[in-house]
Image 1 (cartoon, rainbow, N blue to C red):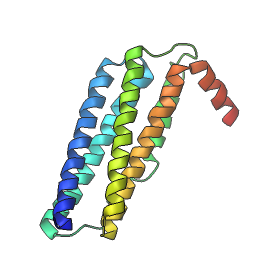
Image 2 (cartoon, one colour):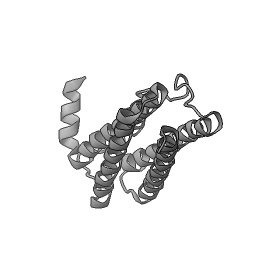
Image 3 (cartoon, rainbow, N blue to C red):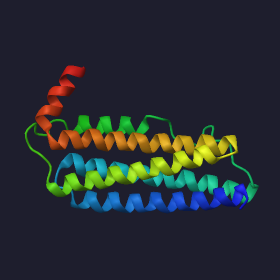
Image 4 (spheres, helix red, strand yellow):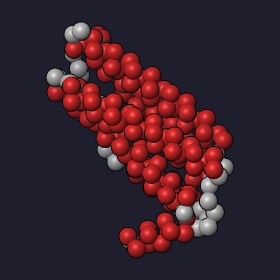
Length: 175
C-alpha cells in the first residue's frame, strides 16, 4: 500500500474515532450529575469536533493535491484545551463543593473517557512514528499531544471528583 493511501485510510479512521469520542462525550454530558463533569464532557465534545474539522482539512488536501498541506497555522494552539478547562474550573469553583463527590456513573464515564483518549494518543503517536512526510509527522504528533492534554484534563478532574477535599488541599499548596 502506498503512503498516500495509508494516510488517507488513517485519516478516515481518525475521523471515525474522533466522531465516536464526540458522540460518547455528548451522551455522558447529558447524563452527568456533577456540574464539573457535565461541563468537562461538553467541552471535550467541542474539542473532538475541532479535531474532526482539522482532520477533514488535511484529508481533503491530501485527496485534492496529493500531498500534505503545511501544518503551520492549520492546527489549534497547544495548551488551548487545558486553558479551556482552567476557565471551566474557575467558573464552577464556587459550585464545586469540597466534600461532594460525583456519582458512580460520572466516575465510570471519566474512566472510559481516559481509555478513549489513551487509545487516540497511541494511534496518533504510532502514525507519527511511521510517517515519512514531515508535515504528516507534525500533524500526527500534534494530534497525539492534543489527546494527551485531554487525558490530563480527565485525570485531574477525576482526582477532584473522587476526593475533592484532598484535591483542593493539594492545589492550594501549588499556588
